[in-house]
Length: 147
Image (cartoon, rainbow, N blue to C red; front, side, top):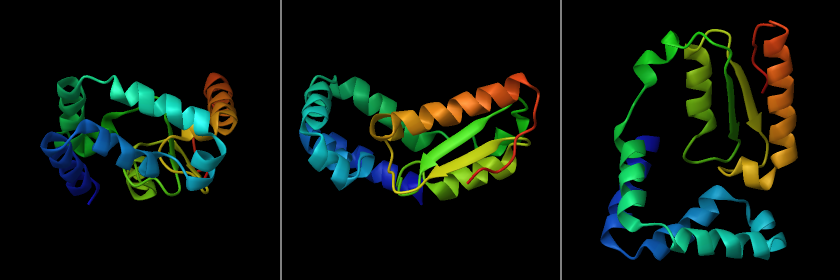
């Protein structure tokens, strides 16, 4: 499901002006409330996206569309924190739950009301999650679901 959507976005990127792709991406990455309240952040993201080399960006996007590590996730044995936004279409909660089920001892956090760019929209929440996770890992505590 997610892979099909990524392949569709890759095809659209290759067939049109990259700015069309980037404009559509903002609605997948960030909530409307955040976009409306942070025009300077949105302007910076648009500026940065406009500077992307189209071929390099497409090559990186192709990796997302064509690579699947789902079959080897159970080989990951180190402490792992899996975090996504509740409304993330690309790295969806469904995918995060599947990863969590495959990775023994992983921790899962699904952030309510957020989309893909959790580091931009909720950096303090992500930092707290990471800090708690790292402290637990340092103390040797096992992971558990933390939805």
